[in-house]
Amino acid sequence: MRATFVLLLLMLLISSCKNERKNWADNLLVEVEGNFLYKEELESALPRGLSAEDSLQFVEKYIRSWVENLLFFDKAESNIPDTKEVETLVENYRKALIVHSYQQALINQRLSSTVSEQEVIDFYEANKDMFIVDRPLIKGVYLKVPLTAPQINNVRRWYKTETHEAIEHLEKYSFQYAVTYDYFYDKWIQMSDVSGKMPLKTENVESFIDKNRNVELKDTAFYYFLNVTELRKAGEHKPFDFARLEAKEMLLNLRKVDFIKDIKEELYQEAVKRNKIIYNDKE
Image (cartoon, rainbow, N blue to C red; front, side, top):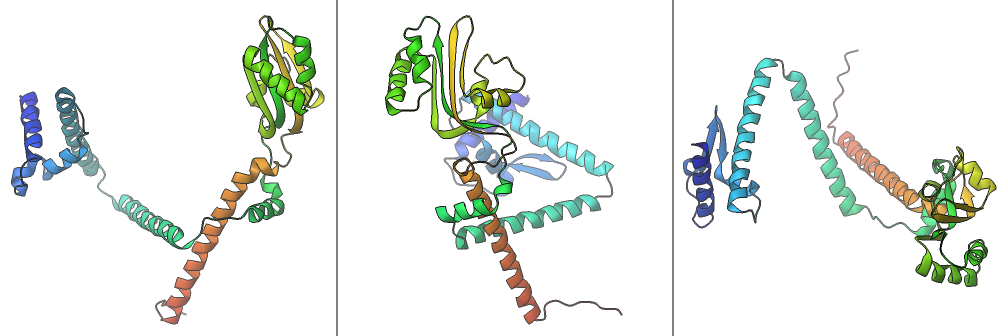
């Protein structure tokens, strides 16, 4: 019986797309204790491109969920007679949502998101203690090579050298023989992104890398080569090129805060000027 109803309902939904809307009574689908589900709501929720079978399943689940949620709400409401606290929370949330939406609209309309590179540098330099390394950072090169690969002695020489010639040799070699080749002489990465790929048998990886900038390891199948040219330990300041995007975002957020603060100050002063604020001084 329910399946027949849903099938007829789906047919009505399809046909309604071709005809003009009738009155609200014709569009009513389900009623539960004074709550109404209309055809328009179901039409808007129905995903496009579904097969007839999938559409039937969706319609049935949607109606069932709608009914169950209403019944559960009514049951909850009847068992929590004092809803003043809930109403206060809802009203506070409503106000916060409206204020947030208005703030975003003001920011988008009146506050530029453009920040010069020098402004970001100045902000970083003035607030270095806000940019602290939580996990070690490194620059360098890493490769993983099968034990059967040729010219291992050359690799041992190339990976320790930052010259253009050595890097070119290493890149050509890695293209042919390396399982993994990561070049990061020009950018900072998390040490763990590389150390996690190596069979390092030490509890303090940071200390080990700090003392051994050229690392060669092997297991039963591969050689592992790591050359670290720069290291920033946990607790040290983040280098600017690593912290740049973070600093820019923080600077923009502070500008937003100051902008909204200025708007509030303007509104307050305007209210004072027009005598809109009345203090009830009973003393």
